[in-house]
Image (cartoon, rainbow, N blue to C red; front, side, top):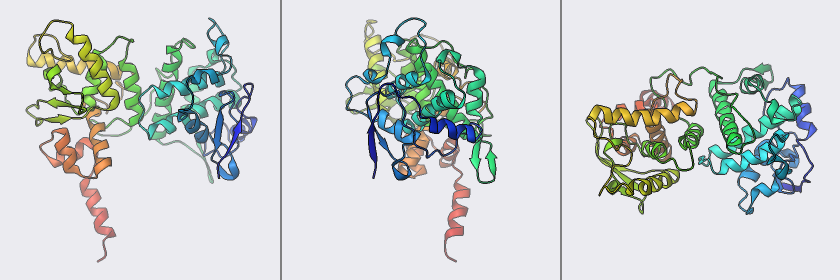
Length: 388
């Protein structure tokens, strides 16, 4: 049964975790040591490890899922000190700010604990593994060491999988993004951290963690509406050839859908934006209504050719991918967002025809390629499992 413990404001990351990291060469294995993390000051956190031990996942899930706090920032020790220019903010103090910021980042339910756990591990890695006491001392070498850190195995340390490295980098990009927004740090040490591609295909689906990262970077400012609206439409399976034609009248915000007009390669259909996407589209409607046009287009406002319209939509999404640090990935394109939506549909339904219908694909084979599903391999595996 889970136990709980009240922590004092002055607590830090427990030295037990630091000892674990040092014993394993700062590797980031499946930690089950007690971790009375201290940046939450007085918050009750749940122990979910063996024998009631507190793991990084337990810490992250407890804090991020804590709806009982009207003002989570009140639980970050030294908040008044952090507001002073040049304040010496510790990684533990920044962790509290970042975990709160993750609530606003639009992460999917399955992504939130994973990303929160990663930034909690990063904090322990900095403070207890490397002895860093100020966020201003975090450099590219520290970030690279964390992202590439090996995993402990019974036969020795093993290099992390490409997907694991990408997850770590994505989580840290959100970490530094939130820190910069709060004015607690300058720059992003992950900017020039290049990793092997996640796949060998021309276009792969983004992960839910990467979608959350892009949502954050689409908001260049508090008043920005065009880039987040374009990204929201892509999440609803709109292609760059369809986005320029979508008008205010195509939105049905009450039912949470948008009418997509199709293209030479896609069928007309309803698209279903995420909750984050509906919010951005509603903001965009308010922004474009003031222009005096009866039924304005949502994203493209010019009068250019069909090619220039599609190019403008492609640029709007590509700029978000660029700011999120994903544009240099050889298998990431604007279509990767649609592929993510198709992957979510397949995960939800298990039906490739549902993916084809809801993404506007006229071919089941093309729908399968879009989401990276090899139906032939799946069929062969089912045949091997079937009794002869």
